[in-house]
Image (cartoon, rainbow, N blue to C red; front, side):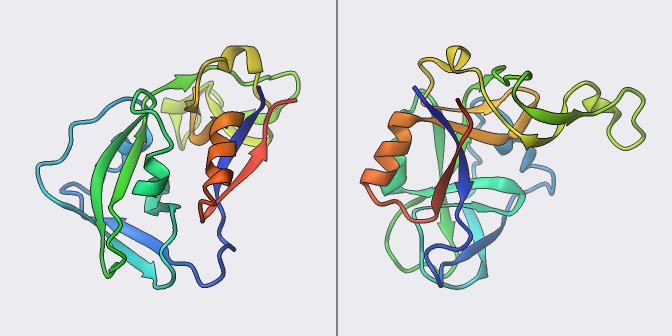
Length: 187
């Protein structure tokens, strides 16, 4: 099975919208939604602002890499792998439900022999809390054997990257999801 990095296609479709901030109570609440695992659903209604008006799309990221999907995209994913939290998009009149989506699992699967990356160093002045974790990837490859059985997940020690398996990629393509593209990360 092949694996792919899930990417927001910023150029397609032309004239697409871009989403902005969510109305969290605390300015740092977004961290729990880009970390792995289930989160407590907020007791208030969540809204995401439009950074730039345009055509509604099926998949995108709002500020801070918060993954936002419509119902069409959500229906393609297993609730064992993701958690959906209803969110309204300010100014959206399409009638489609949208969801702030968190990813449940992370996998330690970077193929360090094939990948090119930097790590956060010990005693780093900027992010000492990240010492030893991945800082930047110039070329990313995952070990397919370690990913077996996972449809969608985040990379351990670098959770800003979302990986999907080939079957989920095909489902996205078969359903013509807008706003999404893929970069192969397995050999």
